[in-house]
Image (cartoon, rainbow, N blue to C red):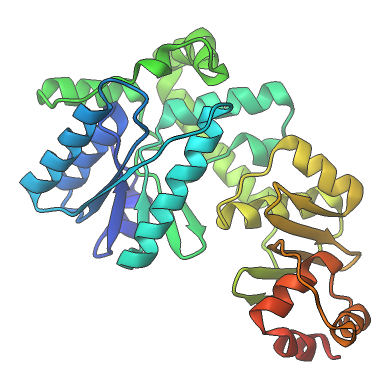
Length: 330
């Protein structure tokens, strides 16, 4: 059931599993154990369901039984767009644990049904081949590697595995609600397709992955320091925005379709109040957005060197301006 490429990346490394107690992460927990992969677990309790406490207790009991460390974060999510805000909170927690514990890999339990639901949602919004394949078995991120060993495994196979082995798991009832768009895609389209064509869908995604690799150009990194990345800009806008999307994903930020359009239209923007993105004719600048009072001489030198205005404050605050100026020959 586990993807071989993903397994190879996990062997002999320090791994952290994102665990919820649901079908996917519970099956992955036991399959990793079965394959001799060492890992600790991280659990997020949002406190919005009656069984949240029971799930946390279950996570702690599994970890204690198998001699693993368990990291728990309790957090309250403000009203409005719960899924988006919960994802941000969840990954910030994971990144904290990874940094403090010096973990190499973050393991998540995304599976084939998830990948199909994503494809259908992107298809209905408007997307190319690169955007339709939103997940990879192995993805490099800043400071760690994101590994998804179950990406080509149908959810139904995971349920059968757990049931046959009499392994306890929980069902999140919010995943059954029609209030969430993704749940409607699952119920009305993805579930039927997975029941009828799971093997063919898995093969198609492997073909699409190869197509994506051929279509998406390798980034030519001109300079990288702290969280600043300077790329050589490709010859057209489509390749440029795909490189920007991939780079921000590495940094933990997912661009929306509207944000991509904004970048292409305005060329120099701040996305989500967090990231400055600038597309000059020859370069792409990406850095955390800052607002800092800078000396006039510094700003003038940045102008002469062609440093994008929205990234200057970050460069000034982090103190590596001279290294960058030297690279730019000014």
